[in-house]
Length: 223
Image (cartoon, rainbow, N blue to C red):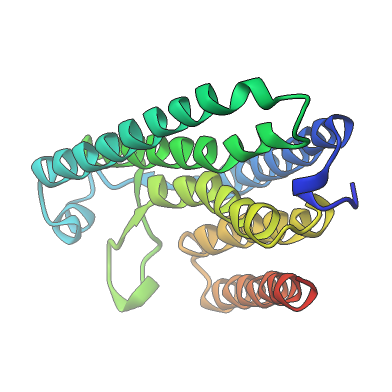
């Protein structure tokens, strides 16, 4: 799909789903391979990791969840009101339905953030890093946060590239894919025992970060 997002035809919009399937599939496969290779251990049951974690933050996470739920409700009902006022223009004004994409993505982002904080409040998906990472023993790794990044960052990039800068989805696709892969690689580096291999993984993640950043900079130059 090479047409700018805002002027895409319905057929081209459906082609977006092939890109979403690619992003999702690549992220899931990379995550599964890394998880099965690293075999991270839960922070719960590791005294050193539990001491680093610092205790029960359930009340704080509950307040954060309330904030995200409030933001979701406001965005959702604003989206509903916008659609009710614009739906009679579908078929008359080309692309009018595309104006719903940004609020839909924002609603999903708020839901994912709320779920992330719920998982953290339950101390779920917190793993312990390999010894020596960060110069400490039993460093906690907030896997739930990195999983949230793998969902929300692509949506933010779509909002920035396709919706705000009107770039074709083909231009947005590569940095989205590279971003999710370097997030996965950086997460994996926490569990690499050998320092040389660990820094090699970190170096690869930084290289992919620079690559994705260069692609995103071209969105601005081509706008």
